[in-house]
Image (cartoon, rainbow, N blue to C red; front, side, top):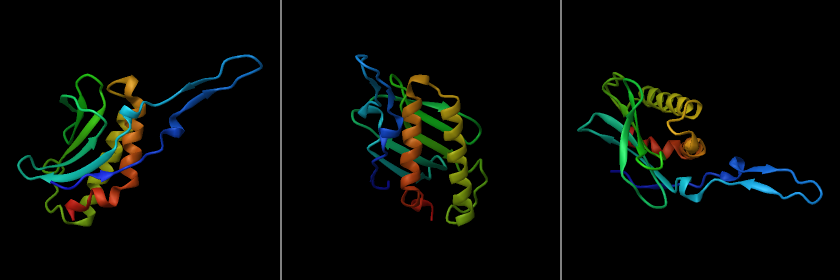
Length: 150
């Protein structure tokens, strides 16, 4: 199992502010710190023939798999709907050697595509910001994250 990589995605861009006029009250909608991933790791699970990306948050909860298509399964929190993991079926993608750079790019593309789909059609609409933050966290450390495949 690879080590956890610390991430610090900027949640500021997901903060919504409403303008104030005169004596009106200023309102801000903030992303909960519980929805911001603290760390991420990636590893190849030989038993399942899957590349697994895991997200770590403040607190913990039981998870459940949410199959997306023939290649990808999301692992989400049973209660919160937070994204705890992404499993990519390397065998179904017909990746013969995970060490080939070309194949790593295929896996990266699949992760990017499925995260974009998750953001556009969220499993849980209340967690759409969480999905955006996990996507941002992945993009910040993608070279280190996918290193177990090379």
